[in-house]
Image 1 (cartoon, rainbow, N blue to C red):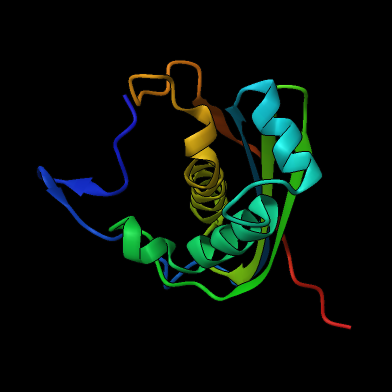
Image 2 (image 1 turned 30 degrees about the horizontal axis):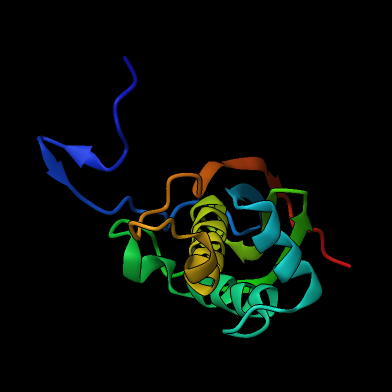
Length: 159
């Protein structure tokens, strides 16, 4: 069985990455929020009382990417060089895709996953009044399938 890199002698610790090469790193993550058809139409038409849902979710995703080490204890502070957030609006769902790029010594998949998670949570927060049932619950609203689509490591070439 493979050992976990962040656990040694039953203690959690941050992995030393100082000996790793500095390379270009990309990661893309995706996830989906299932909503009522009517809610999705309000997002599409810009008719949500709290404001522009996707613009707010995009900003939240970017902020979340930059704050990942504050949320996940063993993540390193890394130089984020770009964040791209895209949304796909379906009939009864919205998919968030977040690509993160860095030049550094460790990957950016946790940052991409955090960006997707916070984007979807922000969408939920902005439309929750339209999603509640008569008891104040959310029986059909769901965030699902948050995953890494790709992770790339490229050697830096001098020009």
